[in-house]
Length: 331
Image 1 (cartoon, one colour):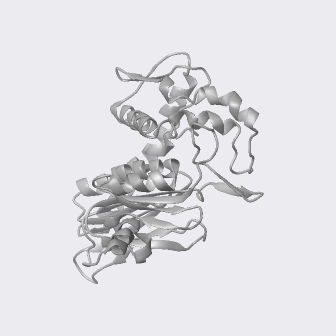
Image 2 (tube, one colour; image 1 turned 90 degrees about the vertical axis):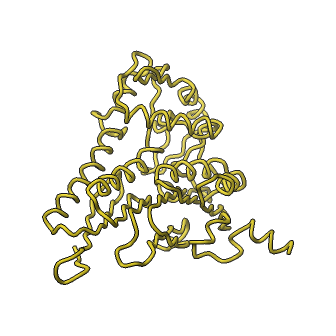
Image 3 (tube, rainbow, N blue to C red; image 1 turned 180 degrees about the vertical axis):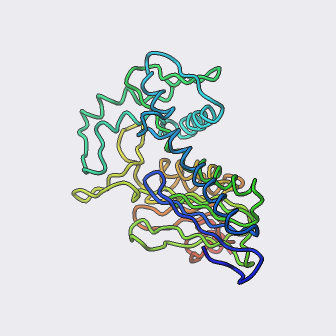
């Protein structure tokens, strides 16, 4: 923890912890002293870990595991928080034309990113009937997977929600300035205490440890990035990764990474997921035309396509903005 002033006054606190297979970093400014700051740090970590325990498909005691165990047998009563996330996942299913599907979890039986196992088409074909967002029933506070063997996975919406909830803990406690980062997804609270802009680096999808570009943000914002480099491998010149196109069972292709900036990390995450699955053309068009959202896609070939509004706060060359480039050519 580092003090911003040597005596009384605001202090900058930092806490780090493991979360969802990655790392979480939370920095916040507070004036109430170290004891209060440590209590806040524990509260933020506790909220993040609560969400992980509740929605992880790898935890036998999670609500997701309970829903999956009950597939084809009985509906499971869920609380408002779970109902919201399931509904959000099904909205993405519809908006993506089925490319995103929360029931794609059934395919984990044949895809293994750690051992670098690539399934055969026959293996995928055998499981594809279980990938069916249309077979998820959500009514009267219950969730039911109609087919035995189906598995729902809320990982596509859960992490960004956790970022926002953690930021909410700090805001409700009266913290004036904070930045929360969970494995690359970010939520800022207020403005930086030193008067500068928030600076958020976007990972380069092909150069480990390098930044593709930076975002300079003022005030509250949510940032999310999805990429084919997070969990994946290359075999025989082909890149395989965990963002699966549910209409085929194979990894989405065309976009190496997608980044979005919105009011919340949850909203930004929806758009990065869609951009990854829709491809570089339709994905970029979605970012460019959606109100309240700015972003960029980096294609498989390394081309950066950024929305017009991103020019206000991103460190990118002029050629990265296709719409602005077309306007310049017409002038």
